[in-house]
Image: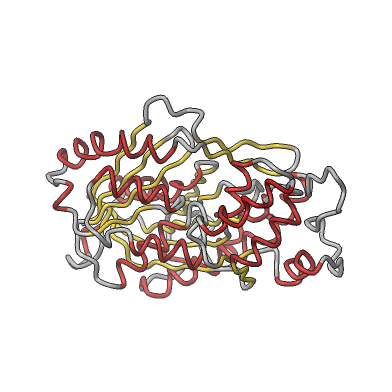
Length: 368
């Protein structure tokens, strides 16, 4: 039994930052030396991002860009030699206010084309790694969409960019275990709440990449759906050797801190193919038989490494690169944005989705 996708919905905060404006904000937050300041433009040009959305809002962004303080936001740089930005508690207050409405918007968009109503759902899977609140977006989804009080809730937290793939694995397990299961999966991330202040090369790179967004999936057991419906046929996971320090996501006094080692692309290039070939073989598929690829765009070098490792044809990651350029790296929802575009375009199957997160862990899903 597999998990059949009936609807995908996405949502973005209304405030948009262009990459040139993001660079201006970076200069205000990083307090770079003269030498470091010369590196910033190349970091932002090389991120593969043209624009991104932020839940912080246009007024706060305008204050950051103009050096004004009309909003009195704790995110405004103080101008002090040592400025760490908002405390983690302040960032979590923003998350509690801003994440649930975005999750509701994405979930409502997924329910629309599914043919189901909120009251029909039996299982709710939520995914997020950029905030902790309880009760959280699960309660907001139940109330706003009319989910039954008996809906079975599962939260997948702090798994990073591949979190939605883990969520789809859970949804598949529910649909396999219960023929009548009707599952809503919702992923929401507010990465810009965790802007790093001050100069740390790895965190400056993270600031250049990450963005905010939400996405949701509604699905059921595949027993009663037509064959053209996309299905989660199999899931796989692999811990890449000697990589535990290559990517980390820790909670500090001033936000959640992402560290990205420059070794990540090389680790993926070397180790991805041997594992993926074996996993696909178990399901009767060769790498060159995959019709389309949904690769989480951790950054352009991640996509380059996947292409190199798998010897992918030109254009195989074009949709991933387009989502990165238009929306930045939204962490867990990003892969669902990519799947939404591939599915809407009638991309050939089988399709393989790939994501990478702290560990360094590779996660994969095979869609048929």
